[in-house]
Length: 114
Length: 114
Image (cartoon, rainbow over all chains, first blue to last red; front, side):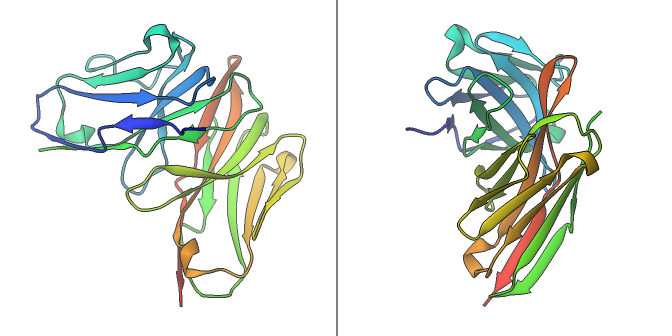
């Protein structure tokens, strides 16, 4: 089966500019996660989707971050405007619905804000 | 709030040694624990998934154990090889308000030198 696909792999933008990341989960995986990983840290959950419904978004900075998962498949994470502190790796993961399943991660998008 | 700690933070060993990586968590009300490997600049690759009802899982030279009551898991790597060099992360899927909150440790950075 195809894995979790993320794009772009790398992105360099100036501060105050907008940026968007895209994720295509594994077919049949109803649950989708967006994580942010800073250098030397573990991933931190930004938002979790169950199908097209956003849940567990308490760590998402809603003043500048937004996410959507139309039709419960692909998802987009947007930052507008970007700040220097947003530089990190943004990881997307998916899993089957339910507590007993593990996660599959994409390769991530490395964002550098200059 | 679930907290996950991984010890040691970094480890450098000669090829051929048997290794133990540790993961501890503060809330024992978990569904499962998953070990991942992360190569530099890459996403996370799943190694082993242990359900809360299980004591251990094995895959090749890897063995992961889980002691839910004491909030501990260990990843045992037998006969380490230079190709095992990577960061190893554990993720705990617990419960919070009825949802499945995955929490990561910061990882153990492993270097196996020839």
